[in-house]
Image (tube, rainbow, N blue to C red; front, side, top):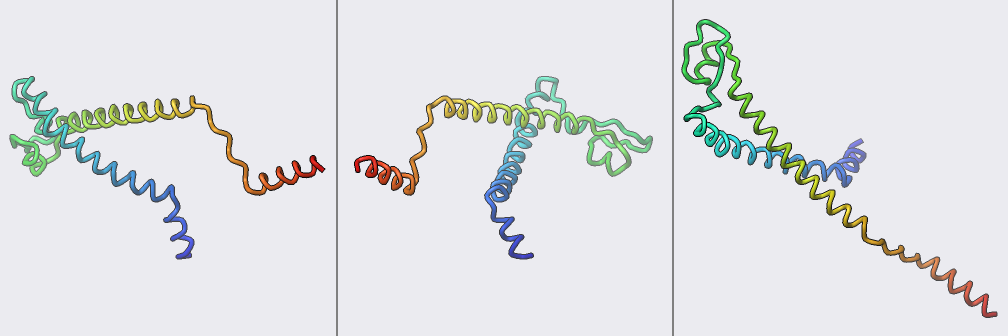
Length: 138
């Protein structure tokens, strides 16, 4: 069973998937930083210095905090500012993935448009062709 698992884990598709997950996690961290550290502050500056990450609606009367972290400690809150930030994060990831896939599709179409070379015959086929040609001469 251990051998079967090793064989499965070392197949090309599994290794490719593992690499993709690691790269995806790193890409996600970059996009999160882009949204949180660059895009949302710009949007906040445009809207008068608002910080979307602290926007919330208290769901309990005892929540009186002025920031989201303290409000969560006091009771239930509806953190719609955080949701807005994560939605923008998702949209950026979706657009970037769309552009990457679009570029890859264009490259693939260019490769398909090129005439493919016929495959080289195997050594057996070459040998049989030579034998056939020798028999024709006889």
